[in-house]
Each structure stands twice: as structure tokens, then as C-alpha cells.
Image (cartoon, rainbow over all chains, first blue to last red; front, side, top):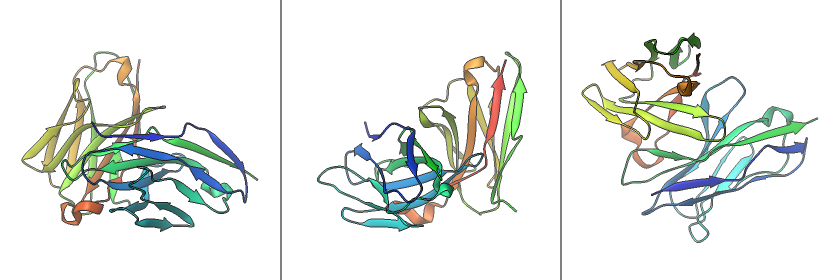
Length: 112
Length: 115
């Protein structure tokens, strides 16, 4: 079945560092891919998405490119801030069903 | 006001008790979902509903039941709570009209502790 694998956390960085959180997937068909973010004490919210190969999603300085050849959707940010500290979830949605398949989440800690 | 609300936000109960978690939304979405979140496991789908008359089991429905009382309300019940149902529960909604890039909107969560 479909699955999403994320790098384990926590990931700890200093402010202004470059961020990469790896996400790879297995799926039949052509999934849409998502990154959601969960700030402390809150529900999840969509950060960015891409619905077809080579699309780049971007929001709040974060970017991720849908790479079909490597089945990846890695999240990147050039300069992180303390306020980016959160748990980040990668997810996919396949056309054949209506469910989102979630990665385990990666906790990001940014130190001043 | 929040678009997706959940009540209660926190609940402590004892093994064997019946409890209900409630979710309401003002987004006008037809689809609603219940998830549980456990550390290191991401989110797992319990039940989902595409409209008032359409309710479906998710990955981990055993021990849970749901009721879709109206388009805006979707309740999750634990008929006889057990300690391994201790988790963070999220309600979410989505709009069927957006298809491929369908975004889910989450409530703030209910933290449940079963003693």
C-alpha cells in the first residue's frame, strides 16, 4: 500500500541555518503531496502542496519540489527562525482513494 | 472564531467509561474526519464521512463509533474506553470540490487520558 517515510527527529538547528527535512513516498498512480505543520498546542495546518511531478510548493519561505524520479518531496528553508519550531508532517493523497497517508512527523527545534 | 472546533479540549476518564468527543465546523465542508495522534506514529484515520449519510471506517476504527448529526457536526464515541486509547484526537474537514489538491482543516485537538 501507499506509504510516506520522513526523517526521524528531533532536528535541532540554530537560527538562520538551512533546513532540509527529507520525505520519500511509495504510491501507485499519481499522488498529490503535502506538508502540514503543527505548532505547539495547535492542530495541523497546511504549509504547502504539489499536485503533479516537478511542481514546487512554497509558503512562508519553505519550499518543496515534487520529484517523481526519486519519489521525494523534501522540505527546505534557507534561513530558519525560532518561530519555525514545530512538528512537520509529510502526506500524500492518491487519486484512487480519498484518504491522506501520513508520515510519522519530524519535530524541528530552532535555538536562538 | 475558529472554523473547526472540538470539545472538550482535555478529558480524563476511567477504563470502561463511555465518552464522546464532539466536532463542529463553520466552513461549510461536506467531508469530515477523525484522527488520532500518537508520538512517533503520525496521524491515523479512525473514521471519515463524505456527507451526512456516508460514513466509512478508517485504518483503526475498532473500539470507536461515530455519528454525523448534521453537515457541520461529527462526533466520535468510545463505547468502553481503554488505556491504549489515550492519545490526541483531531477532527478535520475538507471540501470535495477541490479534488486533487484537497486541503484538510484541523481542529485544535482533544487530549484524552484513559486511566
